[in-house]
Image (cartoon, rainbow, N blue to C red; front, side, top):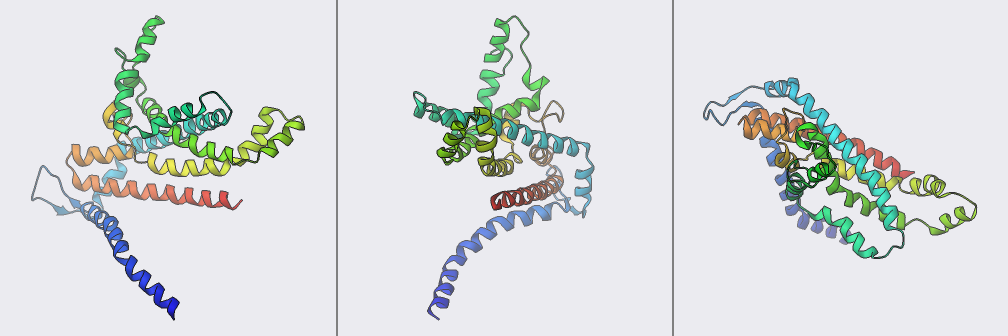
Length: 290
């Protein structure tokens, strides 16, 4: 009886926080769902009308949606490929006893603490600018024409910027996993004559499988909503070449003032993000059970 009373008291004390959290999540979602069923344009106040699923039909059949969806998948896949590959290599390097190891680790971690808007501005103006950027000066020194990153390869440029931001996160997770590996296994395999590549392939890489899965899960959830880097650098252009789903919803809502269409796009983006998250969570669960 005392235990049941304690549990009831605990639930009563926690319930205000739970209700506040639910309201904080459900109320904006409910309002977005409501607006998505209306023809609601900020340039025509007072003309709102119920349209049902017309906004969803328009958004899902818009050619820009498919291009933005493809760009979103390319952005997520490209960043994951760079961060996981680079994270494994950096983790292996930082695990070695090198001079100034603490300073090197701080330098590697530093990009993760830079705000996305600031890092995008730095890359845009100090590195990728064809006239005043570092890459532009290097190209001129080599006698070749500077590469126009944001006009010739806009999506690839954003992938590089975002990967630079998330590489420290992947490195930290993978470095922690490597340091948890039993050194006796590596020593025994080395004594048996296994090469460095064989040790990496058959011992280190399988040990990193869970950590890599966690990195994929966490990064994917955040990468699906990349926005600041696109806004600061390319503005989604040229055309829709660097527009992802998040930026497409922003453009329709705040640039075209179409609240109804933008809300429908937001609901579609949320549904797709949840489908991806559920799939990744199942993948993580299966991996952790191994």
